[in-house]
Image: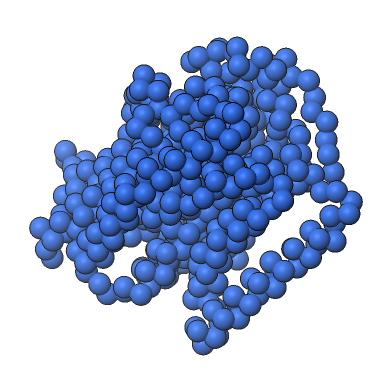
Length: 506
């Protein structure tokens, strides 16, 4: 089905609109929407592992550390895995704006469910948040890209500003939810997340007229004669997932939490491969677009490994903060979840600086080198954490160790993540805009899936071995990306020349 785009007085002259720090005012709408959505998501994530592993008498579910870490990791996988579904629905059926709005409502319902006591409500809430995020996350980023033409030099700067906004919400959420949790319990903390999501929906609805009209357009609508093919594709996917689930059940000796974790892990690792192949072979993708897809593969692998490290903030690093860290600093007693405010704080402070640098350097160094630098810093952060754990021995490490690790990781994130969002909108085939953004979010899905498997396989390993070897392996891949970066740049340049397009910063 196709929808006509309503006229938008603010969106049409977006190339001349500079009312929001030199950018279209529609960026403010998306900035505030994601700020509140991330407030809800990261506030919930900050206390999720603590809730799952807390004793029943403390209001938790009393899971052991390894199971809790694997479950939180695979929950992150599910959240991002569904973004490819959300991107497909936007591209083929409902458009970006409706996907974002629907996703926001579902996320809010999920947080309300988490606020209710009982394990059933907990798992229902986690599922609803994952489904809603799948609808919202990739499409709101696509709408940011829709505000700019391909050759608009403000594109990467816009994503850095957008990234600053969403991390503002991420910074404040643990600070607010922690005292609420301590005073009223875990479920009250989840309710605060629900209120934050309600604000996100309200801002998005209020700012609709400021957004680019492309958000109401179905980019690649399903034609009537395509319906059987689409239904067949959905059936194949469901059968494929069922087969993976059976394999996981056999390996686990029966269906249970372990088999569910393995099923989502395998699907998350298979999904990006299938998505790349389908896009590459689609007749709707031109030869230059295929070259860009090939160039995107090394970037995707780097992003996957980067998020494998960074998203352990909610798993292994939360456990390290809770059990292996002296939480007294400057005479203050910290909560383990407060360390998760460091990342968004650093982003909020430095994102404008990075946005300014990219503008002043004409987006140099080139994209693949930025990715390699980002992955290198993530690797270094885990080597530093391993060294600190070794120095601490059987005692507790100082809080400054985790603070330093988070700062290093965040500087790496500023090299890779907002640049990756911008690069995805730039390199995506036109017929797969939403799905390609969903593909970008499959990188953290696959990274979290790797974590879910590794934390189970290395149960009992020392912190020095776990963090040290993870950092070394990531460093090897970073060096490999530096080596193939000239090839990546060449593919992008050749594709642009074939289309007669010039893009700054490649």
